[in-house]
Length: 234
Length: 192
Image (cartoon, rainbow over all chains, first blue to last red; front, side, top):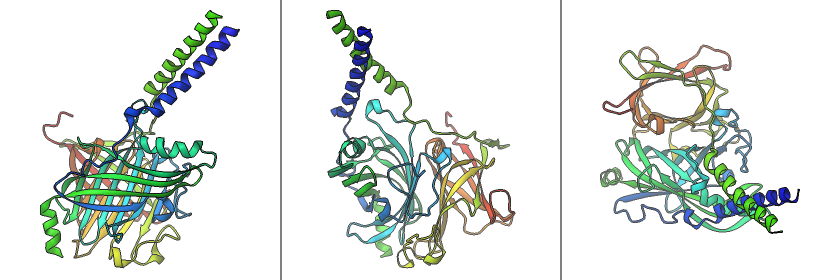
């Protein structure tokens, strides 16, 4: 009997050691610097709040930490969309002025491999910038660093919250350099084929309420021809 | 005592390997899939129809003038920012009326940006269809459009997307429904 007890205790300790190894694995950290930081092309920087209650609309299946907003928004309860989140947010330019609107659909990805430190979501942004046009951003995001440095610490904290400074590049594909794929729709972006990166800056998170102080940003590369068209329009 | 210690160490190794195997082989995400209802076109490619029941499938309606917006208490940006742009977000069903995704429809007649109507249809287990529609519907009641871009399963496809508002009331709707029909084909020379 004592051998069985010893074996079981060993298995439990082994499993815990594995989980700790996975959690503290230094080789799975994400870049904090955007791969577009050194681009010579012109970029558009758009920022938005990542706190549901500071956005126009947020909804999911109602089971996540963040509550759908506004209160009476439809929830995504059906099995095919239960792992999907819908954001509608006002996008701001570098000066903090409202410059457009973004609709984001994101769904958990079956390519997720926790073993490799990849907690992936497939997401698309449908963006409208008045006076400029529309575009679609297709990306794979890796939330592992965000979970590891923000969400899990908040959950194990006795106060069920996290305060600190987190900044991470969330986009990790499908572009070869870990960038998102941008397809222009109308206006100045009509024939645009470009790339983009989304990053997240967090200062406060509650394991009960979800994001408390959090901002996201989208950096979109705009080829010279498009920027020139924009200047002519002005 | 030594055998007991060895059993304990063996347990630890077994625990590490077992947990590793579980994390490695068991999918962390297993998305629900509805069977695709696809019809083959005579000239190649396939046709897939989606439907949106109105008003039950509306998640958001953002119109100039806050009073018309859905859901209640939506703080839709004013005309000062978005002009006459209309945004709608829907739950999307397949032809058997099973929910398969969500979609956004943006429309504007702004001369500043150039008028447009476009759809982004997001099917979580498959990918996204980004379609641009013609401004004027055809005589048959359909509004024709083209697939501007697709992601994942739709990335290598080209084709047309048609939109039609059907006013006949069926089960699940009381204002009619929107039918989206995607006729897509793989690019010539595509291995798939």
